[in-house]
Image 1 (cartoon, rainbow, N blue to C red):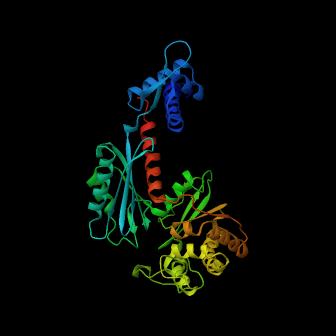
Image 2: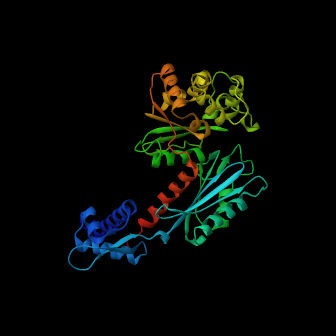
Length: 391
């Protein structure tokens, strides 16, 4: 048995070394062959062979020289940005935003379009993707993956949208239509899940393998990260926290009629706006009302306390089941509330349950869904491209 495995060992080692070198180049920028050898523990000869192999495959390129002591300057190498591109898309009821990034993660193109005056989701996504790639100077054929973040449920088995409250024209069969239209791998993912991916990469949940993200905006949603992986559930409905039956709101018995579910009625943007009116704040958005309460100092305390009490109903219900060490409050209200709201929610959850998670505001003030879509696409494409470096 062992003899049959030996011929594959050098191939596997080359693949592992190649991947390690590419990851180093992404993390640290241009490196010499000697430095790659030092950081990977490879000999000079093996490191040189590795770089030559990656250069032949078009994955790395020479980007300059590093002056040394005696002898010629050493060549500097970096991952070739144009070896692959990805597109991330954030789709909402009123607009679609698409961004194109090269394989290094550099965003080179971005477009934003209205979705109000169209009933053609394929056309909307097609135009956004093509324009994002074009503005990045990339051919559509070089785009290896497109990840779309949308509200609603994504079937884990088929990858298709099964229910999107705010996007009635998005339906089953749309995924196949988009793949046929763009001739590129297309992936749907729930928008709140993508926000959690971004939070784990560069936000408030960096270094955390287990946490939940609660999104408070026009709708309320939840993303669950366990062991560094998103938990979707058997039907993709894990995290639809708006449907939690909670005190203070009637429980609709026919969700297909688009009635607002219980926790949504209590803690969504409309409910927070109504609460703001009761406390004497002028009409405006829910986020603006929360900001005004914070700006009012102690006078705004009663409203913030009530918002926290309502949010804690959903957070506590989640935490007594999952017991996560961290809860991130995101969305327009979570961001607006900042530490003042997060601290109140943390106190309230500890008061009504046996668990005591740390509750913090989002660390990503701009476009977390789009960031998560790009990160998800990049992770997949790097696995494909970097994982196939050995011929």
